[in-house]
Length: 309
Image 1 (cartoon, rainbow, N blue to C red):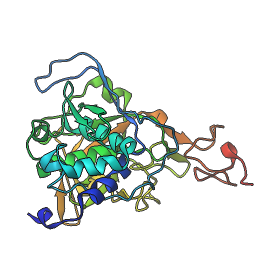
Image 2: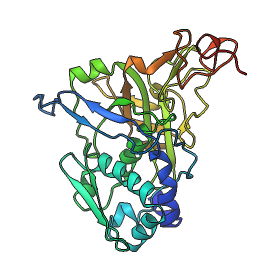
Image 3: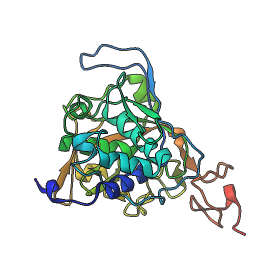
Image 4: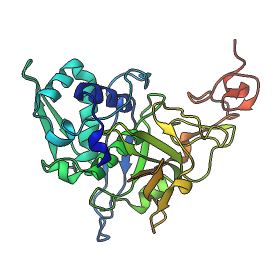
């Protein structure tokens, strides 16, 4: 396979991957309907960033995780120990989100730092990578879905923003959702896809309607105005065309099953947000996604943010 030929150092790949989990929101779910249609008890998948707001995506450069590292051998390697020791706080955060995306709820993964004796434990949640969670090598499908999951949780402004994540696991099992969840998170936002593990990068496209010039999003990485559709607000995430131009819609109409970009086909995840996550220039409140100016556009909003000094 092509991705087997892409080799850079384990430390470099793991460190670059940390970019995408510096600033994240949460996944919130209502009562869950499983594959048989049975409604399960309400639950919330908490994926809130621990730490102060304002951390940006510029701390580390993005790339991937080598196949002979985390994806293949898990946490028990010298390579992993060396990478983890470089910045235990940041890299523990990386692993928090990797495990939450990859392993199912009720499972956890632990690692003991031999130099300090500290044991780190990370909880599963979405179960996107069942093979890796059971101790096997991470498949290419699992790499793609974990990459999409990490990208979907990046928040440009360092805010804790709940969202709905829809799609399928690597075994093509739908992520559970409920009618309550769809009603609460009724604004279609974006599709995320790519592969961090091979250094191919990650991509985001707007799902459904673009924002108007006077609107902005507290998330910003996927949902944009049409004018800014080709400009990434969350580099190194690359913003691409709208999801319906690149992706195949599931028969349910709720999420995409595959996206093709630059000749490569990926398994994506689709996100939805609450309508209140869309800010409007003219409502009298200067939101973090708005800027001062002399006009009525979100990036030039005098009524909310005043004139620039």
